[in-house]
Structures are given as C-alpha cells and as structure tokens.
Image (cartoon, rainbow over all chains, first blue to last red; front, side, top):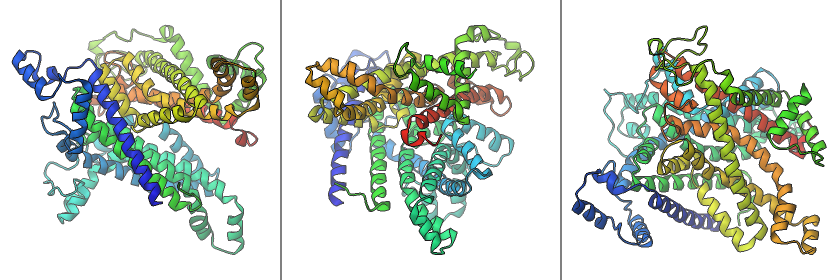
Length: 335
Length: 303
C-alpha cells in the first residue's frame, strides 16, 4: 500500500513535469509577445531591452525552461503580467474560493445522488425512477452556464430567495483569513451570521455546478444497486430475516458504492471545468475566473501557474479515488 | 418509415457500404436501436437537427444578421416565434443558423480528434513495449487537465475564433480515441487472423491499415457518437466565456451570452439558444447510450 502510494506520487511528479513542458512549449511558441502585453505597443527600445534581459527572453528556450523549473522549486512562479503580483500569491488567494465552491457542489451531489439512486433502484419503474431518469438525462446535457442563468432569473430576480453574486454580502465584513474557506474561517472567528451569509451565497452556484455530477452519481448508484440486489448474498441476507433497511443500506450499498466512488472522483475533475463557467455567471472570485482572465489577456506566467495547480488538483483527486476504491473493495491489490 | 430512418442514420455515420459483409449486422443493430424508446427519441432528435442544419438556408425566416432596431428585445409572437434579441435580430432564425455551426464544430472536432487519436493508438498498441509506454505517458499529460480548461488555453493562445475553437477541442479530445484504439489493437494483435497475416509476411503498414484498423473502428464510431453532445457543450461553453466563436456569429453559446444582461425581463434572448443546446445534446446522449447498449454483447440479449 505505502509502496503503491509512493509509486503514484512519483508518477504524479512526472506528470507535473510533463505538464510544465507542455504549458511552457505552448506559451513560448505562440505568436503572442509578453513584452507588448506588459509595456504596451509604444514602449521605448531600451525599456524593451531591459525587460527582455530581466525575463531572460534572449536566452535559448531550454535555458529559459531551466530557469522556470528552478523558480518552481523555490516556489516562484513568476509575476503575473495582468495583476502585477507574484502568481503564487494570486493562486493562494483565488484557489480556496474554487475549492470551497466545488467541495460544496460535490457534497450536494453525493448527499442527493446516493439516496435518490438507492430509492430509484428499490422502486424500479415507479414514479421516483422515472423522475430520476429525467433528472439524470438532463444533467448530462444541460449547458451549465445556461442553467446558472435560469436559476438566477428565477430564484434571484423573480423570487429573491438567493443572492446573485460574490461570496459574501457587501455589509458583511470578511472574517480574518486562515484557510481562505469562508465557511471555516467564519466559524473560527465565531461569527454565525457570516457563516450563514457565506452558505447562502454558496447554494445557488454550488447547485448549478453540482447538477451534472448529481445526475451521474444518481445513475451510477441506481444501476450498481440493481446489479447488487439480484445477487445471492442479498437473498441470503433477506432469508436470514434481516430487515430490508439493513439489507439495502448495510449489505447492498457498500458494494454498490464502488463504481459510484469512481464517478465521484471523475466528476471532481469536470467540476473544475464547470467552475470556470459557474464562476463567470455568479461573479465568483475563484481560480476559474482568474484562469479565464489570465488566458484572455495571454498572461503567460499566470496561465502556466494555473495549469500547474489544476493538473495537481486533478491528479490528486484521481489518486484519492484509487485509494478509496481499495478501501471499499479489499479484494483489490495494489502493486 | 422505420427502415428509411435507419438507413439515413447509417449513411450519415458512413456505415453502409455496398456488399459489406457487416451490413446484416448493422441492420440488426439499427432495428434494436429503434426498439428502445429512449434511443428512438435520440435518433429522432438527432435526425431533426441534422436536417435543420442541412436545410438551414431554406428554413430561416429572416437573415440571421438583419438588425431590426425599433423592435429590439421584442417578445415572442406570431412571425417571431422566439422573439427578437437586443439588436432586433430574429432569434428563431439565429437558432436555426446555429445548428450548422454547432453540429459543424462537433463533426470537424471528432473527425480531427478521431483520426489523430486512432493513428496514435494504432502505432502505440501495435509496436508496444517502450514506444507504447512513452506514448501513453504523453496522453496522461493531456488527461491531467479538465477538457474545457485545456481547450481554453489552446484557444486563447491561438486567438479566439471559430476555427481555433475546433483545433483546440480536437487537441483535447484525441486522447480518448488513442486509448480506445490502443486497447483494441492490443486485443487484436493476439488474434489468429492477425498472426496468420504476420506469418505471411505482411508489412507493418498493411497489418495496421488493412487488418487491424477496420476491426478497431466500430468502438471509435460509437464513442464518437457519444462524444458529439460533449463537444457541442464544450464549444458552446468556450464561446460563452469569449474563447470561441465571436459576436455577431449566430453560435448558441454566443447567443446565450448576448442575452445574459436581459435575463430578468427578456428571458427569451438566452433561453431559446440554451434550450437548443440542451435538446440536441440530449439527443446525441440518448442515441450514444442506446448504441453502446446495443453493441455491448453482455446487454444485447436484454434489449
């Protein structure tokens, strides 16, 4: 087990190295000039020269790449052209907002998806099952940015149930930053009102973001439950006189959850894609918007930093899934 | 009616060839597809949108770019069934025009991505060993990104426009097919007919393209059908945040973005193009799921 984790972490480093090769190559072969985007088109030649020297742009590409890697090792990802701040500082500021949003989204999907899936499986072809089917089908097909807009139109503009944008209301002061996660920071600061306000702001975007994964998790739970329910050991459990509740939730669900865990992990990755669109709709100050703005402005250092962080998060999510898989199914051997 | 629709679909997927020994199998597949309610709905939706895209110039009631400013943001009514947008353009017309763009993008992306991925997977699986190991690690690196974000990066660097959107999404999508084909090749490599071809001294090229490729193609086509919806969603999302097609293009994502500021009072501007995306993606997903079930030998008996 330990060896397996070590091996996977080793692979992770290789993948991250590859990611930095790809992002470095991409950002350095394209016809966009970081000098022009920094200084504007009317810069004096000596300014341009100074900046070229500072960023080592006159060195051969492999030297530049070496310098970049050396920077990463020291925690230096360069300075963003757009925000003029160290990229690492930007990432540390924006990442928690996205992490909080996508975590709440996946929590919503799991707490809705698994029970609904079980319900649909145990009442196969009844009304619940049909409703679930429609939910699941639209979940995989609905454009998330459109769903977000419709939710805003109905639940904010028409009904006034939820706030439209941002992480907190204007009149609420932000709690002192410890984790960057407002739900946790507000509790640490002992401010219940802030916590409620932050949660209120989270629900709509998190629901929009989590809708697709709710659908996938529901479908997967339903189909693997159906598969498990027909197996002999379930019949045995029933024959022993165990209550239906125990049979379903203790005996069947545990085995049915294995494929579900996989899709949860896979969904977490697609949540990052969805976060880009959701953050745009709900003006959420997270990594997705940072990525969008950096890319639209061809802010090379920021784009490379974002790529690295996203690849890291994505790969860790996959690793966690593989480990959870083994936890749920002890017959799996890692080697 | 049944047979006719089935044939239309098959031709669109390039599956029917005269005197093809697989023809009977194909007919059976289509018959099974038609039997399942959900895949039948999917087929109808897909055919409807394909026809709309083909016949768009004759179906559009107005010019998609014609601005009727006195009637800007006019609500849906007879003559303008989906209403008019902020420049007075007819939304129904633009939604119809958008079918060509979205379906076009998806077809181009899947062709480029499919061909690239297939060739890559063929080479990787056929030669195996060291080459395979390195080539698969390269796909891992592409898979280390969520697709939309990688496509955004490509699109931003190439410059946001329609052509670059297609290139960007193709570069993201090819890995799926590479892995799929590689798996098929690994399986086929050990079969007897491939072995006998090898023992007859067939060249690598001949082995790959006349013996292995035709047998590895079916899963690629199924997968591509299932991916159509995903590509349409990604392309619309890219356009929505400004990385894809640019205004005034009648692209659905752009149109939803156009209506963003009017969503509270003029809901129709964003709602109809978004609904078009939902329905067409749903159609492809239903068809793709049905196709997968029908072609899966374990499920085939139960349908």
